Amino acid sequence: MTTGARLRIDLARFRRNVAAVRERMAPADVLVVVKDDAYGHGVEPIVRAAVDAGATWFGAIDPASALRAKAVAGDAARVFSWLTATDAEVAEMLAAGLELGVGDAGYLERVAETARGGEPAPVHLKIDTGLHRNGIRPEAWPSVCARAAELEAAGDIRVVGLWSHIAEASDDEDDASRAVFDGAVAQARAVGLAPAVRHLAASAAAWHRPEFRYDLVRIGAFCYGVRSADGPELEGLEAVATLTAPVTAVGGGTATVDIGSADGVFSTWAGRVDVAAPGGRRALESVGPFDSRVAAWPGAAIGDEVAIFGARADGAPTSTDQAEAIDTVGEEPLLRLSSRIRREYV
Ligand SMILES: *Cc1c(COP(=O)(O)O)cnc(C)c1O
Image (cartoon, rainbow, N blue to C red; front, side):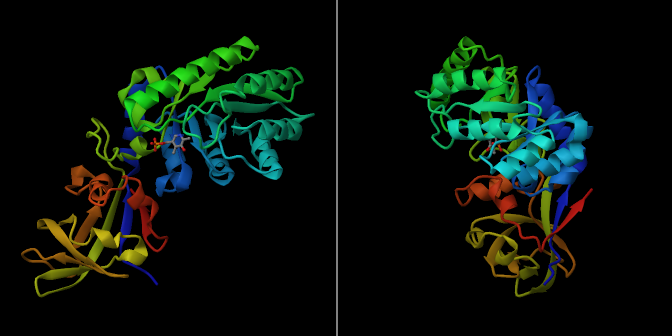
């Protein structure tokens, strides 16, 4: 089944966002996060455009996305992948020149073993600074660092980075995480590790708090122009993707548009958000599986286009505006979109 809905991805806007983020973060470097198929924008075109905009780092949690990014970026960028992967995936990632996030002692051994006899595996050791998702606990950190130094001396690995991930929920919590991180860096250096790349922050902390930038920041949402829920507008950044649907029927004061919950539109948006119609903002009245109803505007006609979310420059509410209406985050509406929706690159 096809739908007339489109996700229009403006690569010029994306390049401008990447350049603006890089400028603001300098002298820290920017790793463009491309997990979840580049937040629904498509890994390959996004990596190509980011390289054009000067990006020199990419990252994705899963090996498949990271490998796709490396295949496009080649020697133009370093690529980092942080999922604890199988031995076969580790071998494939090392052969492709990827750098690996390592957040537990057992995985460190497996990576070292896989690399043994070849080039040392480039490793970024992850300290758990409080999120408790993945990462070496502070109690275990000194001994894991000592072990990493042994494996480095043996030529199996090279510790090129130290990193962590923070909640970005409150400044106090983030500050506490940063203190743990600084301590971990000092302990790693004390056992002889000399990683050149320290990285801690994602979009929000990196943008607003320079002391979180260290050598590298990992930016997903803001590169795509997706601001934080309940966060301020982002000066110089614009949403990259605009979701539109054509009008298929008009009558009884409503316009029917060719997009529904099966395409990834939240049914809970009905009655809670406006969309951008040719006659201005109009209420989204109901969401069915395959089409939705919007309050009509004067002269509404079949073939008119309605933007469900998109760029402010186009007069549309952003994905974060729409997400806030149902208490979720701005990337969520993008990640839900079905593959039935055609992606168009401009
Ligand atoms: C998703 C992710 C990021 C990027 O987060 P944004 O808020 O989208 O910038 C950075 N680091 C890690 C480990 C992530 O999983």
